[in-house]
Every structure is written in C-alpha cells, then in structure tokens.
Image (cartoon, rainbow, N blue to C red):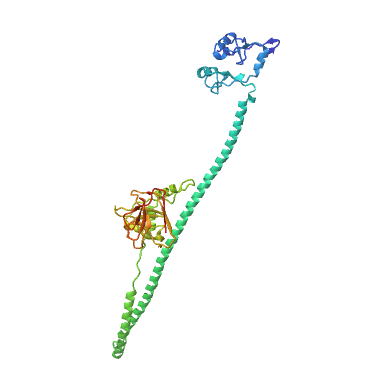
Length: 422
C-alpha cells in the first residue's frame, strides 16, 4: 500500500506472536502470511512446509489477498486450520498434522478449494444432504403422526376399559336391584299378612271385651246372665278357632343374603380387569397371558364344585376345576383324584356334533383327557376309563371304557387343538 509516495512495509507475523517487531521480507503464498527471512527458513524446516515459497511481488501478494480467513485450531492456541488429511477426512493445524497424521499424505487446504463447488464429491454431498433432509422431514411427520396416534390409542383403550367397567357396574346394579326388590316383595307380603292378622285380632279383642262387659253388667240379672252365658259359650268356640288360626299364621319368613359363589370366587381369583391385547401378539401368547393374569389359588372340593363362571349354563358336573370364561384350570389336591367337567347337552350317534379344546398349559401332571360319557358317569374317572365312555388322553392313547388304552397319536403339547367329532 502506498501513502504519500512511500511504500508501507509490513511486519513478520511469527515475530509478532513472539512480541517482537521485525519487518517482513516476503509473503508465504501457501500460508498467506508475512514472514521475515529467518522465520521463513525455520518455517521450511517442517516437512509439511518444505514446498512453501516466499514471494515478494505485489501481484503474487495481491492474489493471496483473496485467501479466506483461517479458522483457529481448537486444540492448539494461536494456530490456524490450514491442512487436510484425505485418509482420515480430517482438517487441522500444522501441529495436529505432525502429531496425529505424521504418516499420512497431508494436503494444503488452499490448494483444494479452487473449483471445489463444482467437484463431484461436493455435488454428491449436497444431494445426500437434500435426500436426508427430505427423509428427516418425512420421518418428522411420521413421528408427529405417531405422537397423535399414541394419544388416540390410549384414549380408545381407556374408553373401552371404562365402558366395560360401567357395563359390569350396571349389571351388578341390576342384579342388586332385583335382589333388593325380591326382599321388598317378601317384606310387603309379610307386612300385609301381619296387618290382616292384627285387624282380625283386634276384632276378637273387641268381641271378648264386649262379652266381659255384658256379663259384668248382668250379674244382678240372673235370667239375662244365663241367656248371655249360653250364647257366649258358643261364640267362644269360634273365638278359640280364630285365635288358633291367627297363632298359626302369625309367622314371618326369615331370610338373609348369601353372595353368589361364582361372583364371590370371581372377585377373589380375578387378578385384573382384562388383558392388554396387541395386534402382533399371537393367540397362544394372549391366552397364556390371560391364564397367568387370572390364575387362582387352589380351592376346596366344595368350592370347586360351585365355581362355574361363563360355562354355568352348560355344566352338568364340575369337580375340582376353576373355570374363568372359556379357560379351565385344574385344582386337584389329592393324588388319586381328578378334575371333571361334563357338559349337560347330550349327543347321540346320529348327531353331527363337534367340540374341541386347546391346550394352553400342560401343568405339573400333564394328564388331560377329552371324550364322551353317559349322564350318570362317576365323577372320579377321566373320560374313557368308565363304562360306556370314550376318551382321548394327552399321552396319545384312546380309551374305550377301560383304563387300558391303545396308541392313537402323539403326546399333547401347548398350542395343540384337540377335536372330537360325532
């Protein structure tokens, strides 16, 4: 730069960093930095800088004025990021290259930037940015949609739970109202009967009081006293009969409330309101979840014989079993005992009847049977063991009215569906 006909000399940048003032002897075109000859000679001793040239022409220096301002190195103070390692795709200052990339072929950044915007690698990078930007925006829309969907799913789930709860409450309320009405009807009938007896008894009291008053008034009138006595004597027979009848009818019906054993047992054994079903969940997994959720503690034989829930209308015999909906669990305690469920609907050889079971758990004993039995079948035998019965057992054998079976199929396992066709 010229001022008042004189040239303005620049100072050496490396010397300035050392807090000294030395006039520059030239300009390093690669580093775009003013240097004195002594600093430049030291500068070229480094492997990375051996090809650097110290220029003094105004034209060469003016070309370097377009050189961009270097970023400062974050690892080494007062050092600029001027170098690039193609092998590791990393940039850094001279110290970075010497320390971390001394075996790599390091390139000078300023030698790479000319026409870089037209470079295929840069063009591919911009296309990839656009591609992933578009994908990210699409994914953001999907995420936000799922965010709303999560709320909708939970809203429907809560609605279904509340509807089911309200249905149960409404059903229980209906049953309780019917039970209370039944008690009210009994009370109304008893009250009406008692009130009638009370009125009838009052008339007898009035009648006997009248007899006594009349006789007392006629004590001094023998004739009338005699006539009245004969008449009242006959009337007293009627009074006595009426009192006997009133006494016989003066009874009320005593009653108290006993909870339905099925509902009572359901409240004790049911662990949760239902199960959370997921669309991608298999039927076997859902059934196993239901069994685990509602698994009850073993009950006494008397409790088991009364604990029928959703199969209540179909059961003829139910012994040592826990029934929850369409799930049947065995609650046998004695070693030689068995659980037995007999459907009350009868079939004949002419019927085209079909029924089946699905195995959701083998249990500890793993001994299960399905078949047909007569109405008077013993409740301590599995189907096929007793007279006139046929049974297919979980050990793969068929029993025809005897405890000696014949091999028919494979042993049952969880997930098997066993079907009986008539």
